[in-house]
Image 1: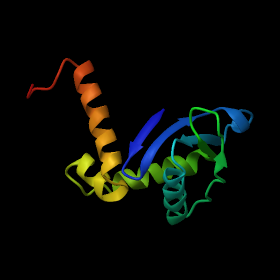
Image 2: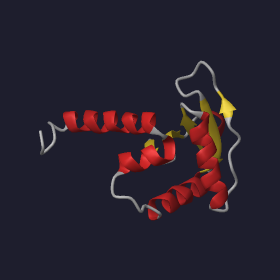
Image 3: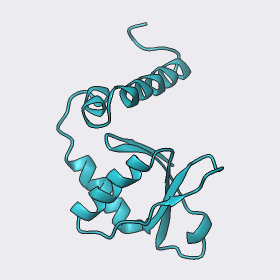
Image 4: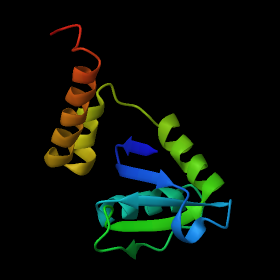
Length: 120
């Protein structure tokens, strides 16, 4: 599952080192800074951070394994804290212009797949 949050872009799957443990989930990203921000959110929420593993040569360069329920609770905390009216503008303030532009491209791709927008 892809999660696009103000603090990062994540691919969340159940594979690799957690396949035999239903309590763990693999959180992957293309940027270590995204996993660092997620770890900070986990800790702020009272949960254990994951060890960031470098996986050079894979499609997601970094990953970590964390407790599934704690991760879900932290994502819920992030959702409950939404206080912005425009996601891309908020991403710009948290993660910078390049990341906001990436979100804009995703928005455009989804709008195109849906047949355009009501404005175009």
